[in-house]
Length: 181
Ligand code: FES
Ligand code: FES
Image 1: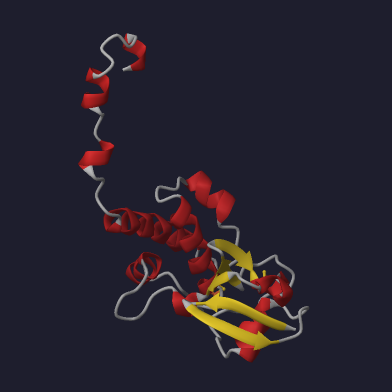
Image 2 (image 1 turned 120 degrees about the vertical axis):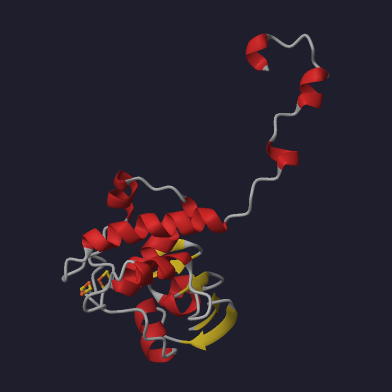
């Protein structure tokens, strides 16, 4: 079947088997090898990519559901010159051991931080459930918190014009009950 979607910021159209998992579309048809094969059954997370901003296990995502979607892989997350905050934190904390599972963890973390830039340990436990056979979990957790700091530091400062209490509006309603002010 013919599928058109956005991959790492570029429109792509390809002919593929609709049952083909996204993982193999990426690795075999598009030669993007950053996404890894681990278990092939949505358990380990090595194959994690973003689909419309959500962390998705590409080994279990049939190509037929790609139409019109926005996909980001590790290759589209950052560059050596301008790494994504998660990649920067991973470098600073020297997280990888063999490295095989790391793309999946990085993509899962980036998806989490896009929605929650101040994750607690509990948030991390609930959202980052990938598997690392080398056991880099302690460094990984440090890196996730560091990536969260970098994400918050990179966020634009709040606009005082829109974030300060609207004194003009309050003055316009001087009879409003105290609790409403
Ligand atoms: S290879 Fe997809 S979850 Fe393990
Ligand atoms: S670093 Fe080796 S499996 Fe995670």
